[in-house]
Length: 484
Image 1: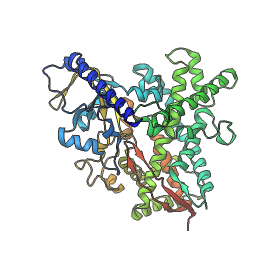
Image 2: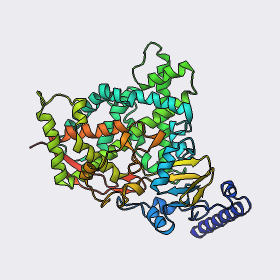
Image 3: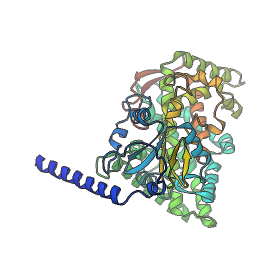
Image 4: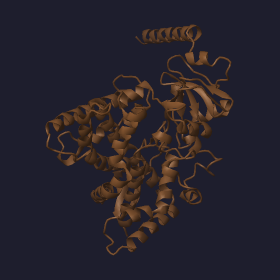
């Protein structure tokens, strides 16, 4: 009966409130106890158990700063406390604090992520590792995504797949760009990671298992069929089963040698010099497969969405790439590394699309010492949420910040190494995204292959929203046509 269900819900909420009251009154947070007499950041923890999660996940119907952050910044300032995903958090919208966190990695702060997110990414994921082991894992990944391999191997792979994908889209009545580019980019990274070939795989479209991940990563952790979190966990289960099977098969092939990244991990496992074990190896593969295509496909889709509404920017982009092609002896020859590095306006377009798209909506850290800043004390043990969009959409940093204006980057120094305290799309400090250069290269090469041979017509524009990450709820549908 409906009334009986209502009574149960009310009783459950009342019980939760009593537990919350007892815990906060009689078992105070040790962080608060340690900081007695100190001025803690203002804010509210919200309701028992759910905190302020409902408002946070409500998202925004635009690319402007999430209303959740905007309202609290206006009320409390850029540093405040809240409760999300069942965790007490201090939120930082403050560029100075954000920069301090990145610069003092593993000194004043260390990596931390909510338990729900770690359940999805894996307890042994690289983002949870510290110190020398993190450096070791990072050095392994850089053998795939580092500058030398990008120049000698990945540049060719990206061009080949981009040309083949674009040709397959030609004359189709409609292409949903986010989905199409996800498949394209996944094929590049999966080939080098696990020698995966969708056309010959018995597992079907592996990348589709990751399809619900962006929604599930920052969803409320309810493991109930039908919820985003449940779909996300089911996707993880399916992918990990495939990766485990592949690892077991590879271990039996002792004479294969190092051909892809999985082989490299198996060689590392054999050495037994580090903390590496099979769980670490599988979680690392899982993260690289996901991160390698999800963020980049979102970046490409956002860039084309902005360019479709800005003929002037599109024309300047086309002229840059036509000029590159005209300077070649053979117009159809592959892009060289020097040509890629000469794509200045393309780089401006990419930085601007990523700034507005805010691909990584939040990042997390934990204070390992008491930190005093802006008149507040952040107690040791405090969990911190960093919001990059507060800098990316700050009118004091970027004039008319909600406008797509790639020319603004002509007068700004581009982020050294891909990050600065004003540009945190790829994080910063010791935890700067190891695939940042690879992502930017993929977007640039795709744009070159696109605008030198094709044009496109928007079939269904759709919308871009932050909820809290970048999403395209109605898709972005285009028709690809030969260049006139």
